[in-house]
Length: 245
Image: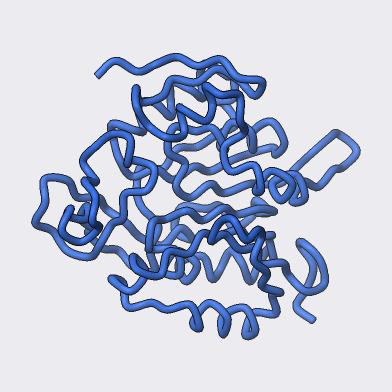
């Protein structure tokens, strides 16, 4: 499958030939534009410019990863699908940010686990089609032609690098991913954005009230970003990087 090359105002990207993100970029749109101001909000500046680490969970082809790399001193990008990792790495090189980004080819979860791609009978659409790739859910267990390894993101982060921003787009694994970031969140108090898809989350035994309880227990304000998408922002009380109130 030959990727299509798309030049945008935010860089040049190789995309799958028929996926929804590539279509948006080809139309000149910033993918998930409602997240852009939040990516910018996490940036801290010192005497030598911006600093701090951003974590991109569900990096896909790297559009958000590249944008984050323009604003943060370091980015850690998690993308578990190996064929997509190839596009991700190519896009990092093309946009001259590869030296600022560490790619981790695993999924995000609260413990080491093997996940399988969902079946059409479980989603109502064919997750093997390329155009569905950005929204393919992953469920516990093996048994399909595609599986991925997943585990706690904490295990892949340097505790001495201050994390300022985390994006979680884990296709049903989002609360599990949040739990796997406990050490990082408690230590650095970053701004967090996450997607929520209840039907997929239930396959992992997780439900929205758990996120609300987590926010209270960790002194984070929880707000829906826009009524047009099931995306939320978790803002630390006391400010980004501040102590727990």
